[in-house]
Image 1: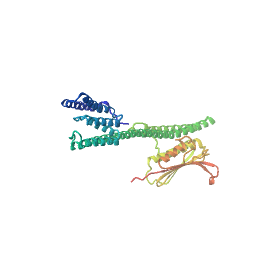
Image 2: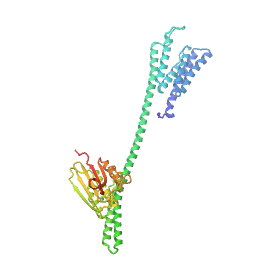
Image 3: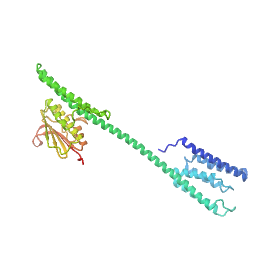
Image 4: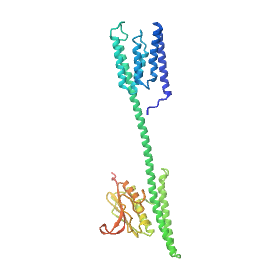
Length: 413
């Protein structure tokens, strides 16, 4: 888009041009009174001057035709006049500047060169009146002036193109900034949604299983309260932990200087044991196996990803697999943390694979196996999930396995 030029910014230029034209017209009229001419000749002179100046009104719409018309009027005016008025040549210079400013540099040069050749021929060729009206120095100055006007118009054209390019780049940068801001907001909402899914889905699933088992036990043995009280205590503890973790997750929506609850449970490798205890309280024979020793500190994002993967896997095991036992293995390697969750349930109705296409609780995008796979990939790791089969992989399904490898990243120097 061209740069915006308001009428208020053009007003001083128009006023100055009007003053200059008025002064030149007055000088021209005074010279005509000094050298009297017949009124038809005087009327023709004023008509040619008016045509030269008036044609400039359309110079923006038709720059080349206007410059050609001004040149023709000047070619008729100067040979037939006993004295030289500067108005036609000034009008021709303005027309050439406009032609160059509109991007017609070749046309401007093509008009200026014949004009100067005609002036030179008229001054050097022998004529009936004899004498010269323009000396050599004046011709050199006139030539330099005309081509300087053309160069100024071309420079103005380049500057306007540069300003348009700068403006377009600024608009594009602003749009890119808005797109990045929206993309960051979407990614943040997805991250929060994934955290909320992991926290609420895991805790409510365990609470649902524990309360259902307690109601079933109470229906079969109405007089026994020991198992009912234990189940209710487990429900209370699970709901309390869920509220704490939910409060810590929602802390990202608060102000930057506001801290999360200090009593929130650790969402890292140190909290995996608590997840196993919750699954055991829900009736699953779960146990934790730790292998190896970390060669260097585990980054918080790696610990959080391992925690969420174990959390989602145990939730799926409790809710969908019908398993009686599950083993969680955390293996520390030199440059990675490997997490393995395996149960003895009936497995998934179809294989999940490394892409996280399905699996228990993973049928919706962004949750289940797909969410775990996304977490692992975000850290440059891998995740595989699928049914465990018998000897040679040809037997029946004897469980479900989730295995993730999470790199520790580059060591700190």
